[in-house]
Image (cartoon, rainbow, N blue to C red; front, side, top):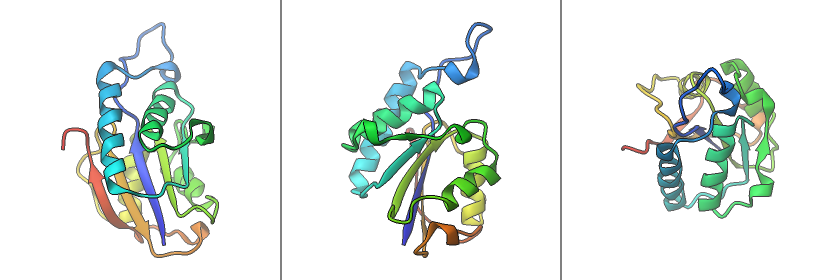
Length: 162
């Protein structure tokens, strides 16, 4: 059994002419969202084997704030450049190439690809995927390479407001 937890980054400051999208940091609301979602994940008592995130500033901060709540060592967070501006196909490939000794993995990234990936893995349409959404999907597989579209079962779908 494998579990993939998709987390869309928390709310970031608005972009400006002087700030590249990659460098946008979390807003105060985004920091609060991360704390709320970290607490919700703690309450699920999941053993997290890995956290892999986009290296964009807002995603990095989201991953670090949630990892802190989970008592996951910050130095063990992996930053995968391919997640930033990834297509759904690229994210699926990343998931298929996860280490098999990892049974429960958190990916932290961006929309619309994370919303699309969740829909594809579940084989159903999730209505919305607001900032800092946490979507847990389980798969009845032993190896990540065996991951297939439409094969996931929704474990939980949480948003900071819900």
